[in-house]
Picture (tube, rainbow, N blue to C red):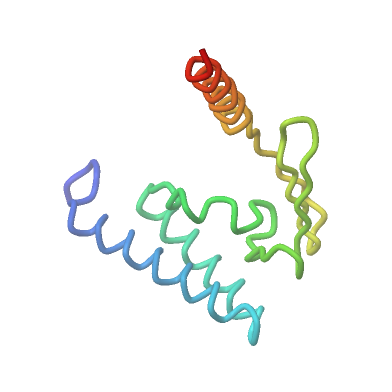
Length: 123
């Protein structure tokens, strides 16, 4: 058997399967949380097997410690603290921190630009 990366068609199928599993996890969480946790575990196993990154839209939606699907308000807490988003998993107590400086900088920049634009029209 050949060594190296897998063929593109295999990687494409793996990404599709991961996306489907994560969508199903979100749909099933209200009625069957255990099932949604299992879907996340399966998606992570696929990512590990094919050496893939999780889709960026789903990266913060599961706990990296216990592999549980996270839904704010039911099994995780979201807090904003010192330009960080703290996501606390209520299943295992793990705290995941994500910076949000880019958003703050963009907001500040747009605010300054709007002020300079308004001052230019008044004159």
